[in-house]
Image (tube, rainbow, N blue to C red; front, side, top):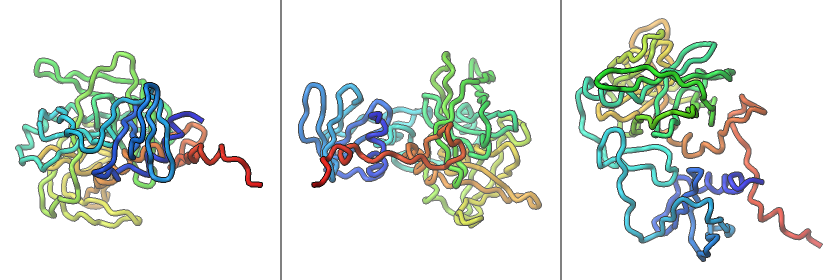
Length: 324
């Protein structure tokens, strides 16, 4: 059993559960183990996670944050906002520590537009957006469902102009068909660091609040539409969606819905075809949960449509002597 699988269940159990008195061991595979460090040796660290003790090899540890230590330095993002910090436990996406001030849509589009991409497959076209500089991006599951050949078109800004670049080495990292979400990663050898967006909160949205979407409706890339939040709790097929008057059309699927602070508050995924101004988006809280528990939704070529990835139990129980 690999080390990654050994820790995966523990990572899921402790995501979002970081206590003030807990130590955090951040792993090189961008996961983390939370608990109480018992001993530190040159080649390993022993940590009590509650029901068992894990011995973590030093060569898989990226950083150790002990309880009571100084706060981690703030990390800069594409928005160059010092109030923005990396999600401490998942080390995977960025979120604001406090709500940003409202800004003009025109200015925001110029600043964050590079982070919005087109996702192409032989069967169609959708949108997506980067969540970190390493090429990880979010789109809808239905955009890539049943597809193995995926390309991502990115618009890089050079000297005030936008140049389109197509990346064809795209890996499916995780899928959640129930919430219509997919996590992809660009793995082209010469891929640069990518501009990305910050994830906000749909919980603090107000009905009537202004929002805007960026996507490629009907293949018309980098189209911006604006509107308001019509309701935060529209129930469709057993799921709750954000409803917005921002125009959503085929091709917008998987693209971001922004607030006027430039934060993603939802992922656009559908509309009512026989009406206007009836668009819907997946609340960003579901996106955060998907990212933080991505090991549970890891994509498998053995069963590509399975929305869950079943993890092996901790190895300690396997080594217990049989009862006599």
